[in-house]
Structures are given as C-alpha cells and as structure tokens.
Image (cartoon, rainbow, N blue to C red):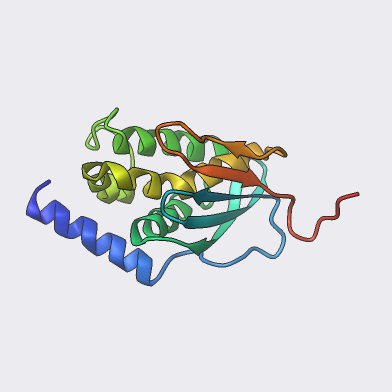
Length: 168
C-alpha cells in the first residue's frame, strides 16, 4: 500500500470512529441482528427498516475497535436507501476485496474501497466484516442464532425480534 493510500485509509477510519454515521437506534426496526467477535470483544447491533425490498433506514450501535466502527458506519451509508439485493451484492464484493479474492480496483465499492487496506492486516479482517455479517443476518431475518465459529472469520451473529414486539 502506498503512503498516500495508507494516509487515506487511516484518515477515513479515524473520521468514522470519531463521528460514526447512522449510530443509534431505530424507533421501529423491521429487521435486526447483533454480532460479536469473540477474539477481540467487538459488539455491533444493526437495525433496519426494510420496505418494498429497500433498506429505507438503518442504524447501528455497539462498541469496537476503530476498524469495526468505521466499516459499520460506512456500510450504513452505502446501503441506506438501496435495494436489499444491492446491499447483499455490495457485502459480497467488500468481503471478496478484504479476503484477497477480488482486486479493489475491479470491485464496485465506492468510498468503501478506502478500507481495502485492512487486507494488509489479516487479524483485522473480521473486525471490518462484523457489521456486514450482522447486516446479512438482519436481512435474512433468521430466528435461530447463527454462528460461524471455526470458520475463517469467527464471528457470531444473532437475529433478534424487532424492538417492541412481543413473544408468546
């Protein structure tokens, strides 16, 4: 990574860590999930308002390292107002770039390309992907806890019933 790319990467990460976008809670989410990275303690909850197959609104909460918070913040900006299928496609491209399966120059990532530098730090890839894993589980609206324990990036995600819902 060139010095200019490294500077951009560090600047973007710090800016989104200091002032995360879409941080907080939705009043009436239709989908939500939370993720935990047991190896470093990052925890993220993602809440979505999905209507007409679009991510009408999105918020996240939690705590984690700068990479985790910046990636999740940028994710919310990238998918808000977009079709669910586009959000899923973007997640696949982002993951492929971070894991080295795709070239950052060839993947349509927009501003997310500035996080491609994370692939230089294999132990931090799971930090950058935690919010994305939670997003995918929220979209899938799984009712069972899902775990990728033992996989390449051991992250646990859980779907949760929408806030304010009652369970019998």
